[in-house]
Length: 201
Ligand code: SF4
Ligand code: SF4
Image (tube, rainbow, N blue to C red; front, side, top):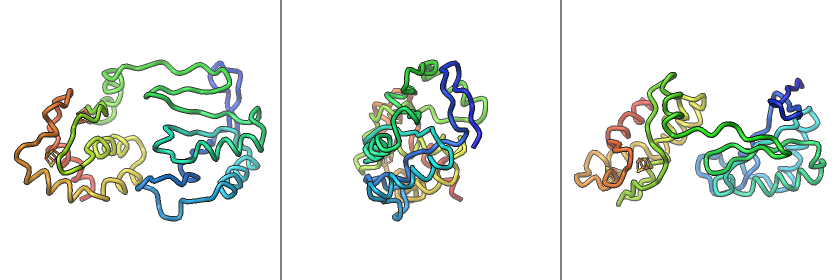
């Protein structure tokens, strides 16, 4: 394993980190069925990575990551908290433990500007005001479009294919389009749904 200095924090982290999605057992529909390890299995998986030299473990929002943070905690206690670095996220801003400074805070416009240098992103701020009477969670689909262009192509396509045909059909038949009523970004949601659907064709 190779290691790098983490900015000016004084910490060295392995070049290969461990994202904790594969060890969670939460209700996350994008996960394959076999991603459902017990606590003991999850800890052993992380121990295996640790033995290979991995000392950087990433987690995120508890609701999305199910019990991953709990399992990571059990692992941290076993391996020694001082021996690993944990990256976490909060309200859209990165945070690293062990006194490591958070990265610069970017405004939504700055993020969009930077993404626009590489592709044409969807300007969704994930405010979730796009309530659909059909129950479609629009913001989840919209963000997959950006994930698709940010190196998570197969993961995003898998999520999109779960219901894009159903959503697309609903939107084509929809006359009121209530989802757009309170969108602060004035997004043309049915058109964006079609743009996302085209990724799957
Ligand atoms: S256009 Fe209609 S069906 Fe489609 S997301 Fe909006 S409210 Fe729902
Ligand atoms: S209301 Fe608009 S900006 Fe907010 S989550 Fe829905 S589509 Fe995105």
